[in-house]
View 1 (spheres, rainbow over the protein chains, first blue to last red):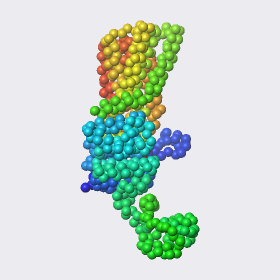
View 2: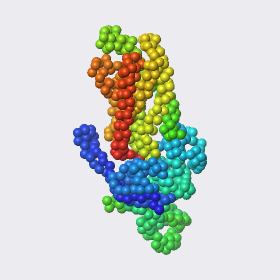
View 3: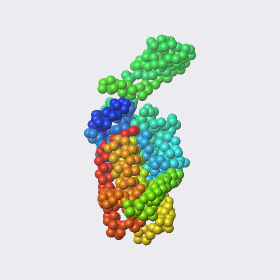
View 4: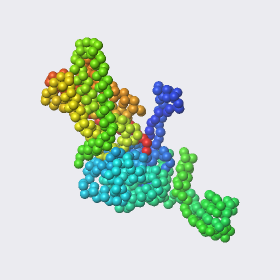
Length: 328
Length: 266
């Protein structure tokens, strides 16, 4: 059953055009030309209960604007959306109790006070009973490894610690739906892994529906079964992650290590040379006939070791962006 | 616990986090008093100022001290934060939770104000005792009680006044300078620097019609005994009217403004 249903969502922003320099500023004092930007042009998709989907796209594609409309922060210009049975921008309190949003670039906690104060405030706002609150705090602070930091002022926490606190604060009322807008942005690899691990576990345990935007493909690969790719305000792909690579024409990447130096010319007859330096080479090969090609390479070149992998997800997605950009 | 009570408590905690800033704010209000003391002493020494202002030297000094005190008691500082919330997407965190933004801001404001009010209470006792001893300010229990009531209304009025001003951030691109100017103008036209009735009958009438005088001049004139009971009663009604007016206007602007909110950055 779809818990989020989005149909032809559109959001336009108006802004003023300004020519550069002082002359432009003076001109704007007397005459302003209003322009309209379509941040979201036409977006439709649905999300099943308990699903984690990745909302992907380049900067300015409309991902965050879409999340803001789905969480009721923004009114759409047109289109419909139903989230857990509610129209988000009607901002009913019953709806606000069903979801949470975490924005990696925004702080929801009281900056000057320990995070535990903000947690308690959320307990009061969402009217959570004491037992459930204590249980949630104990469980989540343990999982996120922040128990020792609960009484430290938020401004004194590292970015990674703060983000864990933000996620904890967002989950105090056990929402059915969680919107995550770049939750791992700027974090080190260890913090990213911790947060990914936590989100995966939490989703499995609570069956929380999650929409995630991230520029880190590891986030998407490890957490999402499905991706909705947005480019220039429109959905250009909506399917499983595994199918994205088919868009690359069923190719594989072969990484080779040699016992002696090899040149690019020596590798070229077997496939597209992605990289060749001294005793290492990376080739792009069609999936079909890969066994024959491999046998050929092994018999003709001094191969010491090799690995065969899928084309990196980033490349497939970048290809989709480029295709759409060219069409538009 | 009621969420607004919780915000109120957190406001107190937040205020106590910045002790030095708090003390500096208090100390900085001494300088205008010194400047005004020098100015009035010079002015009253050279001319027959009492005839033209309607205030004796002692009365004007009492006014100066009490007006500075009241300005501090009712001062607000949340407009810049609200502007930042509106301009940089900070409102998001309020919009996604079942909480009323105005109520949240009021609770936070009152909480942050409490430690300052307690400190100012000590200063108030000192200032009023000093005024009574040196300048002959006569006090009565009734007048002190009415003064305290008028201060509470003035605090509420100043909150809703600045809340409404801050909401213009939805329509104005850069309001930092605007807020700075508004703050200074409001201190002056509320009688926070000098009594406005020294400028004549017309000014008195305008002061009574407009809301600003009810934030500072009105409470000061209660404690210094310039208002009789009838004037105090009318003043209370005017304070309540303006609190309701700005409360409703703020709610209307909030709803209209949200339609324009673009939640930029991030």
